[in-house]
Length: 152
Length: 116
Image (cartoon, rainbow over the protein chains, first blue to last red):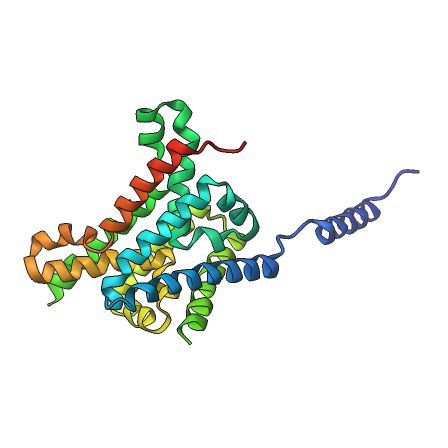
């Protein structure tokens, strides 16, 4: 039996409705909470390292550099051991946004491209993700510095 | 108390990053660049320092803290050295972290191989 235009349209609309209901949505709340908890936990570890240095007489400003270096080392080590990839899989931005994630992108790229050679593989591709962060970070920092100098 | 604030503020910054990943077409690379530049801008207008005072590592450890450190170096050095400081300043507080990332990164990459 041939269907008339109106019936066909209704069926198509209903079909689209069902597709919309069943399409997998990213579990936004769950992802947010995982990123929140894991990112927060990494910052708590960072706070413990920071207080280790401030307890030895450094100011927060002075302790910031060494704290970042320790966290970068921990991120690099966890990447080498394969732990950080699992953490990234679980928590997305929770693992990516802290400085340990910056370190992870460098080490993971260095490990992956090692097989393309130490100079043109590891050495040149190490900053494949961290590079843009440095480029845009440095350019904006210098521009902001220029504006501050001109304004004062 | 600082531990709780570090957890809350650090967690919120990371959660915000996740919301950006889930609701926009940004890749993690884009999101990290955005946060670094935002940290630099907030540092430039003097809003990031109070956040570090309040939340310690919660503001320092996220990549936005890296951006604010870039700007802080530029402002400190340009006050001392003038125009030259604009360029030497970027590595004033971040040089240690960068050198650490390259050095440890290379050592680790030489020792370990990817699992898959």
